[in-house]
Image (cartoon, rainbow, N blue to C red; front, side, top):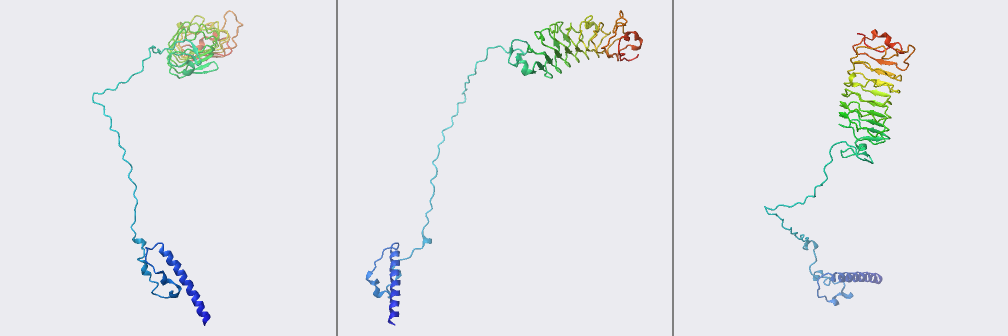
Length: 332
């Protein structure tokens, strides 16, 4: 019985000691009070009057605490400078750059000095920017040209089709000693200077189809291909025996013009002769053949077109005896 009482006493002592430590913890945060330390010894630990918790004052209720809400200070006000309002009679002075004293470039196509992209055209760009230059060939097709532009001296082939060129001047092809082909088809050319082609000693192809040409100047004897179709060319506009000295001429296209007769003294090298849709009314015996040599045969000429002319080709059988093939014509 005594041992059980001692065990209860030890257990009670531990609880009293735990309670003392707990009260000491509350004393750190509770408001100060007057405590009688002698009342809390082990002799009176079970005295209920000793543990009067209300002596520690009122307990804290955290929900009743006033809340402090922090607010940010407003940003400092930025004071804008006052707008500057010019007076009503204010006039701003502007200094303009001085005007160039150089006279403007006239819109002509005159040759001066060659440059990196060919000679200057007088239109603000050289020939090889206005046109296309590739290995001696100059392409100016459909470029809205009204004159032939200056060409590089090394030009060998010149194409300016589908433009509005009206004239071929004496200086257009001067100093172009390597020029072999000129193609000015489908322009508005009505005038060709008498010296336009004189200096072109290597010219082989001359293409002037679909223009308004009435007369041809003296042509180089080196020509192999001449195309003057669809013009206004008259027999009076051709030099006498204009093609006689052209020993290498092979193709001669003169259709759709106003020729009155077939050009005479055609070279033996000629292979194609087109004269359809002209005003040819007769054919002489020596037009194709040599009346002084009955054994003469024109072997190369295989394509003669006379259709669309007011001539009956059946009436001139003797004019074809030296030909390998008869001309094509329209019997009247």
